[in-house]
Length: 379
Ligand code: CTP
Image (cartoon, rainbow, N blue to C red; front, side):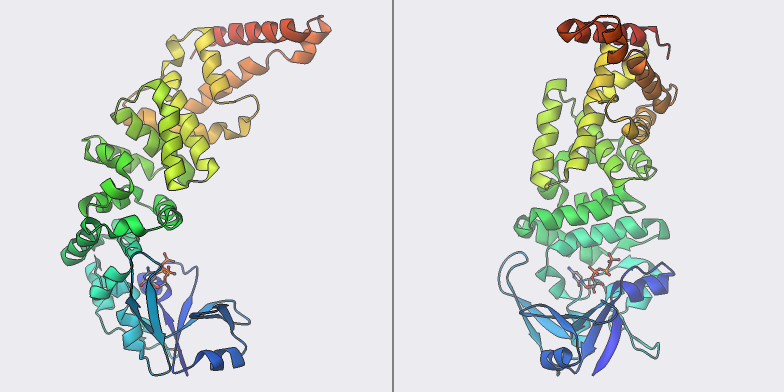
Protein backbone atom coordinates (compact mmCIF):
# COMPACT_ATOMS: atom_id res chain seq x y z
CA UNK A 1 0.00 0.00 0.00
CA UNK A 2 1.09 3.60 -0.64
CA UNK A 3 0.37 6.55 1.57
CA UNK A 4 0.19 10.17 0.40
CA UNK A 5 -0.31 13.48 2.12
CA UNK A 6 -3.32 15.17 0.48
CA UNK A 7 -5.56 18.22 0.54
CA UNK A 8 -5.00 21.31 2.64
CA UNK A 9 -1.60 20.30 4.00
CA UNK A 10 -0.10 20.03 0.50
CA UNK A 11 -1.77 23.27 -0.61
CA UNK A 12 -0.63 25.23 2.42
CA UNK A 13 2.91 23.87 2.29
CA UNK A 14 3.21 25.10 -1.31
CA UNK A 15 1.78 28.47 -0.26
CA UNK A 16 4.18 28.70 2.66
CA UNK A 17 1.28 28.73 5.13
CA UNK A 18 1.35 27.01 8.51
CA UNK A 19 -0.12 23.50 8.49
CA UNK A 20 -2.58 22.64 11.25
CA UNK A 21 -3.84 19.24 10.28
CA UNK A 22 -2.70 16.60 7.89
CA UNK A 23 -4.90 14.24 5.90
CA UNK A 24 -3.59 11.13 4.23
CA UNK A 25 -4.90 8.96 1.44
CA UNK A 26 -4.04 5.28 1.21
CA UNK A 27 -3.91 3.54 -2.17
CA UNK A 28 -3.87 -0.22 -2.67
CA UNK A 29 -5.20 -1.29 0.73
CA UNK A 30 -8.44 -2.73 2.05
CA UNK A 31 -10.26 -1.86 5.26
CA UNK A 32 -9.21 -5.23 6.74
CA UNK A 33 -5.53 -4.50 6.08
CA UNK A 34 -5.84 -1.12 7.78
CA UNK A 35 -7.44 -2.67 10.84
CA UNK A 36 -4.78 -5.43 10.90
CA UNK A 37 -2.12 -2.72 10.97
CA UNK A 38 -3.69 -1.14 14.02
CA UNK A 39 -5.62 1.77 12.42
CA UNK A 40 -8.96 2.52 14.05
CA UNK A 41 -12.00 2.96 11.78
CA UNK A 42 -13.82 6.27 12.43
CA UNK A 43 -17.23 4.81 11.61
CA UNK A 44 -18.71 1.47 10.75
CA UNK A 45 -19.18 2.17 7.06
CA UNK A 46 -16.83 4.93 6.02
CA UNK A 47 -13.33 4.15 4.73
CA UNK A 48 -11.50 6.53 7.04
CA UNK A 49 -9.11 5.41 9.79
CA UNK A 50 -7.16 6.99 12.60
CA UNK A 51 -3.43 6.28 12.86
CA UNK A 52 -2.73 4.49 16.17
CA UNK A 53 0.17 6.82 17.11
CA UNK A 54 -0.23 10.17 15.33
CA UNK A 55 -4.05 10.32 15.55
CA UNK A 56 -4.10 11.63 11.96
CA UNK A 57 -6.76 10.66 9.42
CA UNK A 58 -6.01 8.07 6.77
CA UNK A 59 -8.70 7.58 4.11
CA UNK A 60 -8.76 4.76 1.60
CA UNK A 61 -8.69 6.10 -1.95
CA UNK A 62 -12.32 6.22 -3.04
CA UNK A 63 -14.72 7.35 -5.68
CA UNK A 64 -18.04 8.86 -4.67
CA UNK A 65 -21.40 9.10 -6.30
CA UNK A 66 -24.32 11.08 -5.13
CA UNK A 67 -27.65 9.34 -4.76
CA UNK A 68 -29.76 12.01 -3.09
CA UNK A 69 -29.80 15.61 -2.01
CA UNK A 70 -27.55 17.34 0.47
CA UNK A 71 -24.98 15.41 2.43
CA UNK A 72 -26.81 12.23 3.31
CA UNK A 73 -27.15 10.65 -0.10
CA UNK A 74 -23.71 9.31 -0.94
CA UNK A 75 -22.46 5.97 -2.05
CA UNK A 76 -18.74 5.52 -2.19
CA UNK A 77 -16.55 2.90 -3.70
CA UNK A 78 -13.30 2.19 -1.87
CA UNK A 79 -11.18 -0.72 -2.94
CA UNK A 80 -7.48 -1.42 -3.50
CA UNK A 81 -7.95 -0.80 -7.23
CA UNK A 82 -9.07 2.84 -6.88
CA UNK A 83 -6.19 4.98 -8.13
CA UNK A 84 -4.80 8.15 -6.58
CA UNK A 85 -5.95 10.12 -9.64
CA UNK A 86 -9.49 8.83 -9.22
CA UNK A 87 -9.52 9.86 -5.57
CA UNK A 88 -8.19 13.33 -6.41
CA UNK A 89 -10.82 13.75 -9.13
CA UNK A 90 -13.73 13.68 -6.64
CA UNK A 91 -12.25 16.56 -4.60
CA UNK A 92 -13.48 20.14 -4.57
CA UNK A 93 -10.74 22.43 -5.89
CA UNK A 94 -7.64 21.83 -8.01
CA UNK A 95 -5.48 23.37 -5.27
CA UNK A 96 -6.93 20.79 -2.86
CA UNK A 97 -6.46 17.90 -5.26
CA UNK A 98 -2.71 17.34 -5.02
CA UNK A 99 -0.92 14.51 -3.23
CA UNK A 100 2.61 14.28 -1.87
CA UNK A 101 4.43 10.96 -1.67
CA UNK A 102 6.81 10.14 1.20
CA UNK A 103 9.77 10.97 -1.09
CA UNK A 104 8.35 14.48 -1.57
CA UNK A 105 7.20 13.96 -5.16
CA UNK A 106 3.92 15.60 -6.07
CA UNK A 107 0.97 14.08 -7.92
CA UNK A 108 -0.96 16.95 -9.46
CA UNK A 109 -3.14 15.66 -12.31
CA UNK A 110 -5.59 18.58 -12.40
CA UNK A 111 -3.32 21.62 -12.45
CA UNK A 112 -3.32 22.53 -8.76
CA UNK A 113 0.18 24.01 -8.79
CA UNK A 114 -0.61 26.12 -11.81
CA UNK A 115 -3.80 27.40 -10.20
CA UNK A 116 -1.87 28.19 -7.02
CA UNK A 117 0.52 30.27 -9.10
CA UNK A 118 -2.32 31.91 -11.02
CA UNK A 119 -4.19 32.46 -7.74
CA UNK A 120 -7.34 30.71 -8.95
CA UNK A 121 -9.93 28.72 -7.01
CA UNK A 122 -11.11 26.28 -9.65
CA UNK A 123 -13.23 23.16 -9.27
CA UNK A 124 -11.68 19.87 -10.33
CA UNK A 125 -14.61 18.31 -12.18
CA UNK A 126 -18.41 18.24 -12.33
CA UNK A 127 -18.19 16.04 -9.19
CA UNK A 128 -17.90 19.38 -7.33
CA UNK A 129 -21.69 19.51 -7.49
CA UNK A 130 -22.01 16.39 -5.37
CA UNK A 131 -21.51 18.32 -2.14
CA UNK A 132 -23.28 21.71 -2.00
CA UNK A 133 -21.25 22.63 1.08
CA UNK A 134 -18.46 23.29 -1.38
CA UNK A 135 -20.20 26.53 -2.36
CA UNK A 136 -19.46 27.74 1.17
CA UNK A 137 -15.99 26.21 1.19
CA UNK A 138 -15.00 28.10 -1.96
CA UNK A 139 -16.28 31.37 -0.45
CA UNK A 140 -14.30 30.59 2.71
CA UNK A 141 -11.08 29.87 0.81
CA UNK A 142 -11.62 33.12 -1.10
CA UNK A 143 -11.90 34.92 2.27
CA UNK A 144 -8.71 33.24 3.45
CA UNK A 145 -6.54 33.86 0.41
CA UNK A 146 -8.00 37.14 -0.93
CA UNK A 147 -4.98 39.12 0.23
CA UNK A 148 -2.75 36.80 -1.81
CA UNK A 149 -4.78 37.76 -4.88
CA UNK A 150 -6.90 34.61 -5.23
CA UNK A 151 -10.18 34.76 -7.10
CA UNK A 152 -12.88 32.26 -7.99
CA UNK A 153 -12.71 30.93 -11.57
CA UNK A 154 -15.62 32.05 -13.73
CA UNK A 155 -16.62 28.47 -14.51
CA UNK A 156 -16.58 27.57 -10.82
CA UNK A 157 -18.71 30.57 -9.95
CA UNK A 158 -21.14 29.53 -12.68
CA UNK A 159 -21.35 26.04 -11.20
CA UNK A 160 -21.88 27.48 -7.72
CA UNK A 161 -24.67 29.64 -9.11
CA UNK A 162 -26.25 26.59 -10.70
CA UNK A 163 -26.20 24.75 -7.37
CA UNK A 164 -27.76 27.74 -5.62
CA UNK A 165 -30.56 28.18 -8.12
CA UNK A 166 -31.25 24.46 -8.22
CA UNK A 167 -32.13 24.64 -4.51
CA UNK A 168 -29.28 22.35 -3.41
CA UNK A 169 -28.23 24.67 -0.57
CA UNK A 170 -31.48 24.18 1.30
CA UNK A 171 -30.47 20.57 1.96
CA UNK A 172 -27.45 21.60 4.01
CA UNK A 173 -27.83 21.20 7.75
CA UNK A 174 -27.70 24.35 9.87
CA UNK A 175 -24.72 22.87 11.74
CA UNK A 176 -22.61 22.50 8.60
CA UNK A 177 -23.55 25.97 7.38
CA UNK A 178 -22.69 27.50 10.76
CA UNK A 179 -19.37 25.67 10.89
CA UNK A 180 -18.32 27.12 7.54
CA UNK A 181 -19.66 30.57 8.42
CA UNK A 182 -17.83 30.65 11.73
CA UNK A 183 -14.58 29.60 10.08
CA UNK A 184 -15.11 32.18 7.33
CA UNK A 185 -15.66 34.90 9.96
CA UNK A 186 -12.21 34.07 11.32
CA UNK A 187 -10.45 34.39 7.95
CA UNK A 188 -8.35 37.45 7.07
CA UNK A 189 -11.00 38.88 4.68
CA UNK A 190 -14.38 37.80 6.09
CA UNK A 191 -16.25 40.26 3.83
CA UNK A 192 -15.04 38.34 0.78
CA UNK A 193 -16.99 35.30 2.01
CA UNK A 194 -20.20 37.36 1.88
CA UNK A 195 -19.26 38.85 -1.52
CA UNK A 196 -18.61 35.48 -3.13
CA UNK A 197 -21.88 34.10 -1.77
CA UNK A 198 -23.69 37.12 -3.18
CA UNK A 199 -22.10 36.66 -6.59
CA UNK A 200 -23.27 33.06 -6.86
CA UNK A 201 -26.76 33.70 -5.49
CA UNK A 202 -26.20 31.86 -2.21
CA UNK A 203 -26.33 34.91 0.07
CA UNK A 204 -30.07 35.45 -0.38
CA UNK A 205 -30.68 31.77 0.29
CA UNK A 206 -28.41 31.13 3.27
CA UNK A 207 -27.86 34.57 4.83
CA UNK A 208 -30.64 36.79 3.49
CA UNK A 209 -30.29 39.01 6.59
CA UNK A 210 -26.99 40.34 5.22
CA UNK A 211 -28.10 40.82 1.60
CA UNK A 212 -29.24 44.47 1.88
CA UNK A 213 -26.06 45.35 3.75
CA UNK A 214 -23.90 43.73 1.07
CA UNK A 215 -25.69 45.75 -1.62
CA UNK A 216 -25.23 49.03 0.26
CA UNK A 217 -22.48 51.43 -0.89
CA UNK A 218 -21.18 51.46 2.71
CA UNK A 219 -20.49 47.70 2.63
CA UNK A 220 -16.86 47.75 1.43
CA UNK A 221 -15.90 50.02 4.36
CA UNK A 222 -17.64 47.72 6.83
CA UNK A 223 -15.98 44.66 5.29
CA UNK A 224 -12.57 46.29 5.70
CA UNK A 225 -13.33 47.24 9.30
CA UNK A 226 -14.56 43.74 10.15
CA UNK A 227 -11.16 42.30 9.32
CA UNK A 228 -9.59 44.46 12.01
CA UNK A 229 -11.58 42.88 14.84
CA UNK A 230 -9.63 40.10 16.55
CA UNK A 231 -12.51 37.79 17.51
CA UNK A 232 -15.10 36.05 15.37
CA UNK A 233 -17.83 36.89 17.91
CA UNK A 234 -16.97 40.57 17.51
CA UNK A 235 -17.11 40.30 13.72
CA UNK A 236 -20.49 38.59 13.92
CA UNK A 237 -21.84 41.23 16.30
CA UNK A 238 -20.70 44.13 14.11
CA UNK A 239 -21.98 42.47 10.94
CA UNK A 240 -25.36 41.84 12.54
CA UNK A 241 -25.63 45.32 14.02
CA UNK A 242 -24.67 46.93 10.70
CA UNK A 243 -27.28 44.85 8.86
CA UNK A 244 -29.98 46.09 11.26
CA UNK A 245 -28.76 49.71 10.96
CA UNK A 246 -28.89 49.60 7.16
CA UNK A 247 -32.46 48.36 7.33
CA UNK A 248 -33.46 50.98 9.93
CA UNK A 249 -34.83 48.34 12.25
CA UNK A 250 -36.82 49.85 15.13
CA UNK A 251 -35.28 49.50 18.61
CA UNK A 252 -38.03 47.11 19.75
CA UNK A 253 -37.43 44.80 16.83
CA UNK A 254 -33.68 44.39 17.37
CA UNK A 255 -33.88 41.59 19.94
CA UNK A 256 -36.44 39.43 18.09
CA UNK A 257 -34.55 39.85 14.82
CA UNK A 258 -31.23 38.73 16.32
CA UNK A 259 -32.82 35.89 18.25
CA UNK A 260 -34.50 34.60 15.10
CA UNK A 261 -31.26 34.87 13.11
CA UNK A 262 -29.20 33.06 15.74
CA UNK A 263 -31.82 30.37 16.20
CA UNK A 264 -31.92 29.70 12.48
CA UNK A 265 -28.14 29.71 12.16
CA UNK A 266 -27.77 27.67 15.36
CA UNK A 267 -25.21 30.23 16.48
CA UNK A 268 -23.73 29.57 19.92
CA UNK A 269 -25.01 31.63 22.84
CA UNK A 270 -21.80 33.68 23.07
CA UNK A 271 -22.34 34.93 19.51
CA UNK A 272 -26.00 35.70 20.09
CA UNK A 273 -25.28 37.55 23.35
CA UNK A 274 -22.56 39.75 21.91
CA UNK A 275 -24.71 40.59 18.86
CA UNK A 276 -27.63 41.47 21.16
CA UNK A 277 -25.55 43.67 23.46
CA UNK A 278 -23.82 45.54 20.67
CA UNK A 279 -26.92 46.03 18.54
CA UNK A 280 -29.23 47.07 21.38
CA UNK A 281 -26.77 49.55 22.94
CA UNK A 282 -24.97 50.91 19.88
CA UNK A 283 -27.23 53.97 19.52
CA UNK A 284 -27.10 54.65 23.26
CA UNK A 285 -23.30 54.51 23.24
CA UNK A 286 -23.10 57.12 20.47
CA UNK A 287 -25.53 59.40 22.31
CA UNK A 288 -23.83 59.17 25.73
CA UNK A 289 -22.38 62.72 25.68
CA UNK A 290 -25.83 64.31 25.25
CA UNK A 291 -27.74 61.76 27.35
CA UNK A 292 -29.04 62.35 30.89
CA UNK A 293 -28.15 60.19 33.88
CA UNK A 294 -31.11 57.89 33.40
CA UNK A 295 -30.27 57.11 29.76
CA UNK A 296 -26.59 56.60 30.61
CA UNK A 297 -27.51 54.22 33.42
CA UNK A 298 -29.76 52.34 31.01
CA UNK A 299 -26.80 51.79 28.66
CA UNK A 300 -24.59 50.61 31.53
CA UNK A 301 -27.25 48.22 32.79
CA UNK A 302 -28.16 47.12 29.27
CA UNK A 303 -24.53 46.06 28.86
CA UNK A 304 -24.56 44.42 32.31
CA UNK A 305 -21.31 46.23 33.13
CA UNK A 306 -21.55 45.68 36.86
CA UNK A 307 -21.71 41.90 36.66
CA UNK A 308 -19.62 41.38 33.51
CA UNK A 309 -16.89 44.05 33.47
CA UNK A 310 -14.50 41.63 31.75
CA UNK A 311 -16.53 42.00 28.57
CA UNK A 312 -15.78 45.73 28.26
CA UNK A 313 -12.70 45.55 25.98
CA UNK A 314 -14.42 43.29 23.47
CA UNK A 315 -17.64 45.34 23.48
CA UNK A 316 -15.60 48.52 23.12
CA UNK A 317 -13.86 47.15 20.03
CA UNK A 318 -17.26 46.54 18.43
CA UNK A 319 -18.57 50.01 19.29
CA UNK A 320 -15.39 51.69 18.01
CA UNK A 321 -15.54 49.66 14.83
CA UNK A 322 -19.15 50.69 14.18
CA UNK A 323 -18.48 54.33 15.09
CA UNK A 324 -15.58 54.44 12.62
CA UNK A 325 -17.84 52.95 9.94
CA UNK A 326 -20.53 55.55 10.71
CA UNK A 327 -17.89 58.31 10.66
CA UNK A 328 -18.65 59.36 14.21
CA UNK A 329 -15.75 60.84 16.17
CA UNK A 330 -15.34 60.54 19.88
CA UNK A 331 -13.19 59.14 22.66
CA UNK A 332 -12.52 55.40 22.63
CA UNK A 333 -15.53 53.36 23.73
CA UNK A 334 -13.46 51.61 26.39
CA UNK A 335 -12.95 54.93 28.20
CA UNK A 336 -16.71 55.53 28.16
CA UNK A 337 -17.47 52.04 29.41
CA UNK A 338 -14.88 52.32 32.18
CA UNK A 339 -16.31 55.68 33.23
CA UNK A 340 -19.81 54.18 33.36
CA UNK A 341 -18.50 51.22 35.33
CA UNK A 342 -16.85 53.54 37.86
CA UNK A 343 -20.09 55.51 38.20
CA UNK A 344 -21.95 52.28 38.95
CA UNK A 345 -19.47 51.13 41.59
CA UNK A 346 -19.06 54.48 43.39
CA UNK A 347 -21.80 53.55 45.84
CA UNK A 348 -22.10 50.00 47.15
CA UNK A 349 -25.16 48.36 48.73
CA UNK A 350 -23.04 47.74 51.85
CA UNK A 351 -22.47 51.50 52.28
CA UNK A 352 -26.18 52.16 51.96
CA UNK A 353 -26.99 49.46 54.52
CA UNK A 354 -24.63 51.12 56.95
CA UNK A 355 -26.58 54.30 56.40
CA UNK A 356 -29.78 52.44 57.34
CA UNK A 357 -31.27 51.73 53.91
CA UNK A 358 -32.93 48.38 53.37
CA UNK A 359 -35.29 46.56 51.01
CA UNK A 360 -36.87 48.59 48.27
CA UNK A 361 -35.60 51.88 49.69
CA UNK A 362 -32.05 50.57 49.36
CA UNK A 363 -32.63 49.60 45.71
CA UNK A 364 -34.18 52.97 44.95
CA UNK A 365 -31.39 54.90 46.63
CA UNK A 366 -28.69 52.88 44.86
CA UNK A 367 -30.30 53.60 41.53
CA UNK A 368 -30.67 57.29 42.35
CA UNK A 369 -26.98 57.61 43.24
CA UNK A 370 -25.85 55.61 40.21
CA UNK A 371 -27.94 57.85 37.98
CA UNK A 372 -26.49 60.96 39.61
CA UNK A 373 -22.94 59.60 39.19
CA UNK A 374 -23.66 58.85 35.53
CA UNK A 375 -25.08 62.33 35.03
CA UNK A 376 -21.86 63.88 36.43
CA UNK A 377 -19.69 62.13 33.82
CA UNK A 378 -18.27 64.24 31.05
CA UNK A 379 -17.50 62.38 27.85
N1 CTP B 1 -12.72 17.90 0.49
C1 CTP B 1 -13.58 18.02 -0.59
N2 CTP B 1 -14.87 18.42 -0.40
C2 CTP B 1 -15.32 18.73 0.83
C3 CTP B 1 -14.47 18.63 1.94
C4 CTP B 1 -13.16 18.23 1.73
O1 CTP B 1 -13.16 17.75 -1.72
N3 CTP B 1 -16.59 19.11 0.99
C5 CTP B 1 -11.34 17.41 0.27
C6 CTP B 1 -10.39 18.45 -0.25
O2 CTP B 1 -9.44 17.77 -1.06
C7 CTP B 1 -9.73 18.96 1.01
C8 CTP B 1 -9.61 17.69 1.83
O3 CTP B 1 -10.79 16.95 1.50
O4 CTP B 1 -8.48 19.56 0.77
C9 CTP B 1 -9.52 17.91 3.32
O5 CTP B 1 -10.66 18.62 3.77
P1 CTP B 1 -10.65 19.59 5.02
O6 CTP B 1 -9.72 19.09 6.05
O7 CTP B 1 -12.06 19.87 5.35
O8 CTP B 1 -10.12 20.96 4.40
P2 CTP B 1 -8.70 21.47 4.00
O9 CTP B 1 -8.63 21.56 2.51
O10 CTP B 1 -7.64 20.70 4.69
O11 CTP B 1 -8.73 22.98 4.44
P3 CTP B 1 -8.67 23.65 5.88
O12 CTP B 1 -7.38 24.38 5.85
O13 CTP B 1 -9.85 24.55 5.83
O14 CTP B 1 -8.78 22.58 6.91
